[in-house]
Image (tube, rainbow, N blue to C red; front, side, top):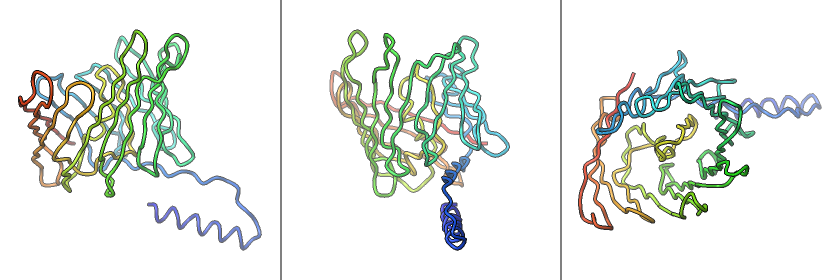
Length: 274
């Protein structure tokens, strides 16, 4: 697709040069492709099930999503092939997540808007090329938008996530300052389907879908979490179907500090597909 898009621009420029005309119309940014793998459910033992659930339209794009067995449930609408809004449709909450895009077609801002039309949270996204490099979350506090969390991303040369650094600044009466780093290594060459969850690490925050963003191409064999609070390492093993899609992700977690240092805990995620 990128080759065809670039070729069309070259031909258009050549045609304009031959006619003595100059096209001043900005090219339309490419539409993000539909997911190549249609993930249905993610189940995590001892947590609300399904933990994540997805539905798709006839073109293979997200049409609906839910989190934590219906704690939030979203209808996804599009404009020109790009997500326009994610609308929470549970009885007690009708927030809308409104998407804005930059000139390259990348999501630049997601605004959480309540049923009365008030924007109460904004996500501002930055990129290094097509790689997501930063998410800054701003919350409306006492009539002002205050940064309460930033997530920064660095990558290996192959495009897999190397480190995710999260900073929460001190906000009087709300939170202390914290900094954590998640380091990922030992990636395999199979299909990753749960990288999206790395940016959804607050249970009561909205789920934000970014179809054009791929944090992890493969599946990491090891994750090390350090910084303020509990530190730990997780060694992962996977089982796959005949299409290289993960069916189970099993983690052997070891606590590194505090009263639980040295203790181990088993984690698991289970995946189903359409």
